[in-house]
Image (cartoon, rainbow, N blue to C red; front, side, top):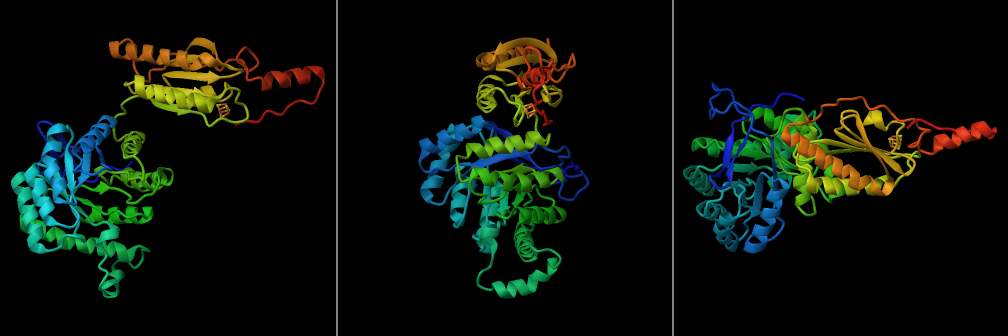
Length: 435
Ligand code: SF4
């Protein structure tokens, strides 16, 4: 992991929602420093999928996303009836809200008036200088930041595309995304000048594309040039199944390189998955402290003797509901490689011949039949959680090595016993391969 790229922090929220800070912090002597030098945690954003003017549904959706762990929620305000709903939505919700303004600067002014915590503008859609200046001044008066989104889909100048390609394409001639990168950066520079001229520096930047490699290149180039926090995302990433890969490849690469201050994973699906997967990405990279259990599970192979896939799904659901401390839980299919692969797990089960052997921090606590594995494992997880909370146990403290049980003993997978019996009876031995 590279060190976090320094960026000027912005703050969003109020006393009721709490303040979320976004940015890596700048050295105190940087001309744009706001005095914050300690990096703020990378935050997770998402966007409501329903109409903002449908107040009850919008509030319910924001509550659901907040409960799932969203740090910031964005709502679209394409029409006046949407900005008119904002006041009531803000009263009923407890998370910072960003108003996404697409085409009309007046929606931005109305959203600021309603008390929204941040505005998102797009230079491709609102480019009249006088209008942009009005929005900047309103946000400055309200002390709220603005996100500038130079996303691929909305910044291309279509009328004089060829002339622009000729003029700017050479800047990045060694890069296959040169043309688009040059456009993004040129637009950003032009737009930022308007903000700087009005002494407005509470800015975040996004440069999304549906092309993961362009996203990596665009944010990398922008991070070199501008000291503002970066809002990472792959736009129109598609269904969750493929969008997850696109997003994680691009965002994971950038974050591992120290680039990115807030993220939104976007799917053509319920936005709750955007929050869950965004958090999981940050946990995986060690950029956020995990809330709840981390489940480790084997992929299964020909040694499996229990219905492990169903067991893993059931364990996952129950852990989400019952466990809040960040314990590691391992569900392994056999005793051959399971113990080694589950090293460091706080609670682990190794399945075998229609049975499961359960360990808590390296100590064997039970051997149970297959249909009792789920309940016993969860019971041990809850007990361990209570011990951690009371100070009786520490997470990740392995007291005893997990010694694999004899594969031909009571837990033996069955294959080993059959092989042994065949050897003893003189029939052709079965071959047992490593996983
Ligand atoms: S060897 Fe055992 S632990 Fe490893 S994948 Fe196969 S069943 Fe799972």
